[in-house]
Length: 292
Image (tube, rainbow, N blue to C red):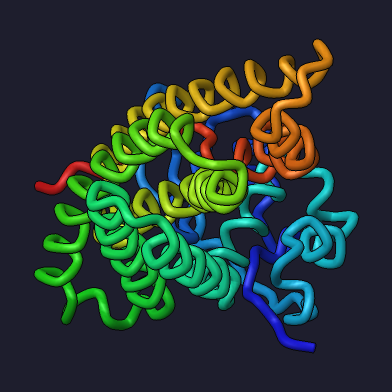
């Protein structure tokens, strides 16, 4: 068994606990701040941490990890699911393993589908998710903040540009997939589904990176706008998949339609992911102390 750090709710001040539940307090990078509009400002509490055991063998099933770490005390807090998922994404190799699997799929598609635009898409995607893993590593230790201001600023800028490119590329790949054979379509469906499942974790990490360096307004803006943009692509993918599966229901035995039908469980898990929804929760703006 290994461990992750998450909040120790038994040591949280009662007023902070109440504030979190009623929206008067916002949690940003392990610190509880009074929310804007509450009449209070500044830090309410540096959140106490505790180690929680988890099984690294279950890293590919984040739901099982949540169940194993979600104690009774945590279950009483509405934000606890997001906090635990976030801790898993940042502190473990969960995302790194997902990206490694994605890279293998990228290599497979690039070698199997002889199309210049597909190879261009794959190169862009590799670059973005490599930057996301760099952001995760940067978030592992707060003590490096003073030494990494310039690195973080460049990384935040890079992620903003490349994230928008990736979502646009996915839109294009969905259109391109209509031209593929059933064998290549099978690979492309797995790939697109994997990218769209990882993306909310990447968006969460990007927002966390902004919080770590005190860019709270930017963090809120990115979470809000990135979620909107992600949902547009996710809905486009959902509509496209539905149109294909409906062809199977109508009795069409087209191999392409059957490929979609065989992927229905994976697609349903993506479109109904409560974990992704939790990570994309809108952030509450903190009310900070005035500097005189």
